[in-house]
Image (tube, rainbow, N blue to C red; front, side, top):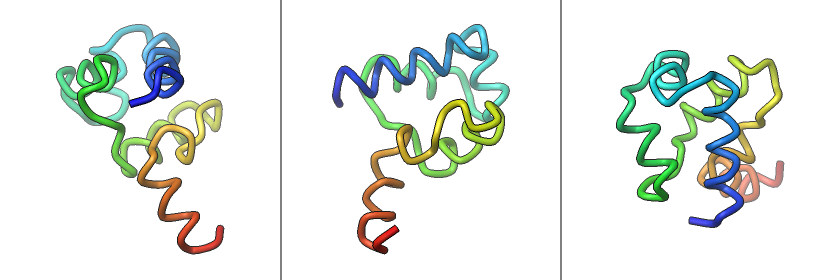
Length: 77
């Protein structure tokens, strides 16, 4: 996982205030958020879409989820 993506995940956590609050806002468990920050997993498309909505577009799903970006590219979006 790129340093840029991990930094972006940190900014999402900072936006919500903590890993626990981020998880709660996105309907997840705290270990999922921790895994993003450690670079163990990437944010899912669903979580990225929820994050975009919950932050009123401050963070874009296409930037948060590499899988979402790949799908959009395949569809020519």
